[in-house]
Length: 482
Image (spheres, rainbow, N blue to C red):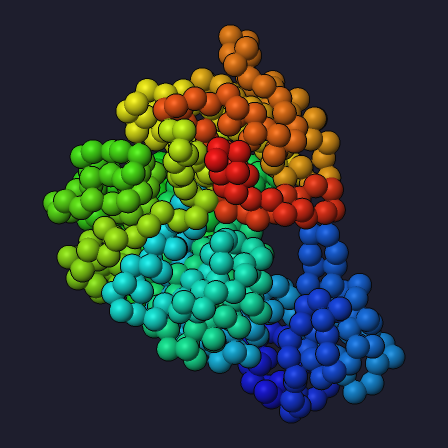
């Protein structure tokens, strides 16, 4: 593709050198540069791409986009100086792939909890309705039904636009993607044309990155501020920050709620471990996902689908068919009458919601045994909060490693123990090894008991130091319950 086509989306760029030249591709990692590429120097959290411009040029880059002045001594190179290279990368990635988001009904889902479930449910509903559909989620990328591995909740701009182009070329008419706060703040979704945006909730998360809750909230709000007037915004009216998202939003505004009057209104009639009976806008439907949080997720799925133009009755029929999402309140029953539940809950609010759901569906009155940890190199403030929630809502708790990363797992458990009330300490064990912790829970459980393994959900690895070792909560749980 001609360089002048790719950079036509940039405003205010200072250009030195020829622009009537072909570029082979775009890269922002100097190790991935190929001859003829355009290299974008991005200032990252760990490293600054400007320090690797020389390396990129030695690998054959013919064009450099940076926030700093051109280096001297390099002839025949085209330089573009821009005020924000992150934004430039996203805009050029879209242009390089022919602006694929403009050819799709692209919907972004943001919030602390529920993004993966809602995006996945929307993909399944639309597939059930007969449409080829794309998915960009924490668990996987789907182009129609063809899977690709997911590396981040929201990929980098080059990956996003690469997959969106594959979706368009494969005949997809819709794409549902998770939009994380990191992605918004790092401008990974800049230049994408969203048909709509949905908001779930906002609770304590990623404060190690954003610094404080207000900054975290305001980053989420930026996504809704960016929606165009012909798009829609659907927010959870039951969350106190839902209406904040709609302030200054130019899109068509809608709300969904389980508690107050809204255009998309839901009510829980019955709740069981294997599913729930819901009433959505006056119509009853049985769903295979239990819990209030899943009722809200399904209501959001319904609202987005209707706003995209589908008939309510058809949407409800598909909602009644969808299965639970992997690692999201994923249940399994052992031959000994013990129920195992694996859930991704890794925030205080998510853990509280899962344990509240277990309490509501625990009709046989068995004990609840919770295995939970907290990630290393992340927000330390939530560790005691999660331990307190687990201790107060469970009969027994086993504190263990999650993804300790570079931290000492014992120090993480020390932080968690600070939140356990004195009167609950006799029901809390510390078992640092996660496999051993799950095995201990299985040994303690009896008939009718429920074991919750929280924090990692669908993940297939555990991060210890700089190593990723194979690890799957459900496989280990089933192995010890069989």
